[in-house]
Length: 322
Image 1 (cartoon, one colour):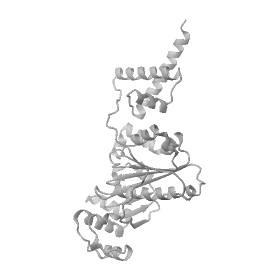
Image 2 (cartoon, helix red, strand yellow):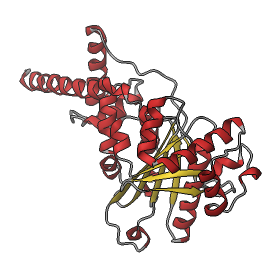
Image 3 (tube, rainbow, N blue to C red):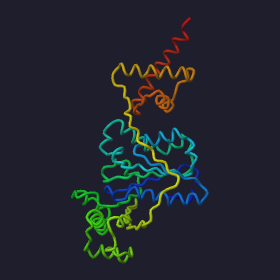
Image 4 (cartoon, rainbow, N blue to C red):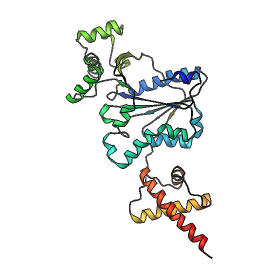
């Protein structure tokens, strides 16, 4: 995921790349993602550029990290892993307004980074997920590369879908990997044995439950797929940041009284901090955090509009007073 233009310094904007890494728990998804990041980091650093790997679970936490650490946006390559993405990017959760706003934020992620100072470089986002269908369709469709570590489940429908996506041979290979990884059972399928012996140059009887995690199937956007040996060695990116998941639940003003309190404090902050300057939504979000208030995007936008109207009226009254 390193474009040629990045290495020869002809990249003049943000190059976005997305990967989905699919596999059951304990299949080595995080280990593989960190290894990919370490390999990319080595090439980026050797080219005289800066690299950062950021791992988190929620998009808001990751963006807050960059918001609070703007110097990190000076890196040339930003690699983000959303671990256990089923929690924060679940397809069904998009039924809720807050999740729809998150979806919009993801679609505008490149512009968010550009607006915050990262205007030229590579932005790679990886989603680690147990089943592909758990991930919202928007995130899936934005990913030109999908890595399969195991078959997702014993569900017949899932297996039919993955068979159509990967083809019968690669589907059988994943089935064998899954059985070897979780049950220690060796495949007897001659086609799969032939892949191990002749393509991967490996005696499958020498593989234990951990060693088999080095293999997987990669599906590309053009419909082609490839069986890959990712290698036995473990690698970790050197410039790594693990973003802790915020445990505090955002305060969402629901009752009229709560909304009045929120508007009151926000308006006080506007006038005290900016001398009648009307905040933009992003500035308002930052200020709200400093006084302990958190809002979902749509609710913050609604409050912003109401507060602008109240601020305008207040200013008119002040100017009209004797």
